Image (cartoon, rainbow, N blue to C red):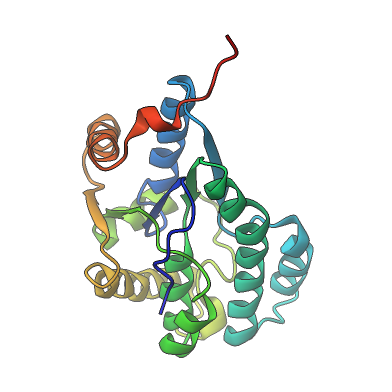
Length: 227
């Protein structure tokens, strides 16, 4: 089970959702808002550890990754960022913003056939976010957004490694549909805060900010200024 222990003064906020749900746009807007208001903020995104990035890129390019290897590489990436960035900054009293958190792994690894309990145990060292915003959008809407103007889908992004279809777009549709089902199954278990991602960007952002204000004592995270 993912850890729920709180031995730090900071707050952890994460966004999750399908590709094309708009989650990255929303967390960026939250980041800029909090920074401009003078709060202590740190931002991190999925699969961005410098330590692991080269291995991940090479493995994907050569199509060498099995579902379990894929899972372990992403877990290593997350663990590196968690130990070096996320946890230290939570302890330092920061608002830590995550563009995708462990739920991305729980959803995608399960879709690739990796045992759900095993993956959850793999990430059991990680604390649960104080707020997990789940940007919920119909599958067809997310697909049209992600495919609009895009010349080609990447091999793993489209789920072509699973052999569901040789057509990248059909494979992507199947993959995203399965990921959606995994997110839906996690909503109640992990206490996701659902946001209607079909609404206008500014409307979603206003709702997100209101929820943050309600659940977090923001003035406690304002940067100290020298007298």
